[in-house]
Amino acid sequence: MALVLGIETSCDETAVGIVDDRKLLANVISSSVAEHARFGGVVPEVASRAHLESMQQVIKQALADAKVGLNDIDAIAVTAGPGLIGALLVGVSSASALSLALDKPLYGVNHLSSHIAVDSLDNEKKLTPTIALLVSGGHTSLLKVNNLVSDIEVLGATIDDAAGEAFDKVARIMGLGFPGGPIIDRTANDGDFAKIQFPRGLSSSSDLINHRFDFSFSGLKTAVSRYLEKSADYKKADVAASFQEAVVDVLITKSISACKESGIDSLVIAGGVAANSRLRQLAVDRCNAAGIKLSIPPIQLCTDNGAMVAALGSLAINHGAKPSQIGIEADSAAAIAQIIW
Ligand code: KG4
Ligand code: ZN
Image 1 (cartoon, rainbow, N blue to C red):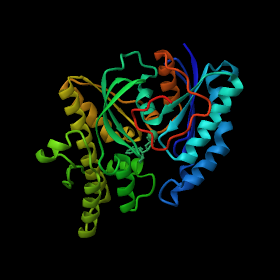
Image 2 (tube, rainbow, N blue to C red):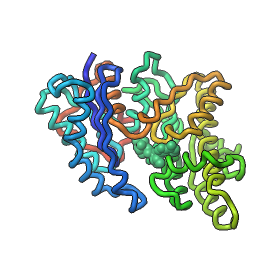
Image 3 (cartoon, helix red, strand yellow):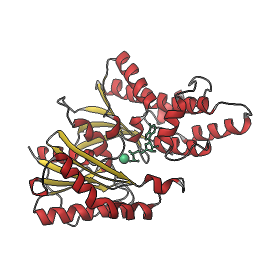
């Protein structure tokens, strides 16, 4: 049993979580999203500065929420990649300083596997092997997770835009604002998802030969753009709902095929897009029908947070992983296979 403090700064959230083994004690997030909104996307320099400004307060608040002192912490975990390099550096430097000052081990962990690891919190079930669909702003992949700390196989990934990126870009085309995912989700609530038949990327029988578990969303984005140009009269809610359906349909269809073909009857869906209400609903319906055990973290743990980093740190400790060296380098382009630094 260990009390682990996790720090996440890969993008625009300065986030600190504290877990006691697999029990969630604190999850504090300070987001700079409002500062980026007028630019229509995250501005790396602005994000890095916001991390510096918020870090100490976020750590203090997490300790207060967990009702523990800094000296009670047994280990520090931190996102070391992938992400924005300047933003990652603030987290890695802060975590290294804490590790040195407290003389407690440091675990540099992968942001992508952390998204999946958060599913281990407050959850007694057996975690692996499982198929995992990872859907975030920067990544979309279908994974076979044999062990969350040591063995993740990539079955497929997007060949162009990530799912979250598609939501963000389509929201921009539609003039809905940033970040697009939650706005499209809300807008789609009043729409008819069967109104417009948008294309399902890499789903034709010929595509499936070479891209069985890969995804593509850039053609869909173009299709939405063309539809808006040529249609004089449409409801934004219908476009949002039909676009969302096209994304979610492909994600779930391929995830279920991966489960069936690998003989693994459990699916975890993680990452920011896993907060999407239609994705959650359709996943429940189709997994029930297919006899697949589905697990999706609570909505507030799907988007970037520190609890997921602490959760992976905790799993690493239980797995007997060696702590990271002080002076680890953040890696903005880290692959999912590099789970611990
Ligand atoms: O995992 P995450 O918080 O950050 C990255 O690691 O990228 O994911 C952020 C992405 C953004 O593209 C955002 O638009 C999307 O997740 N997102 C959503 C929803 N909430 C966040 N997409 C669809 N529906 C949502 N409700
Ligand atoms: Zn993320």
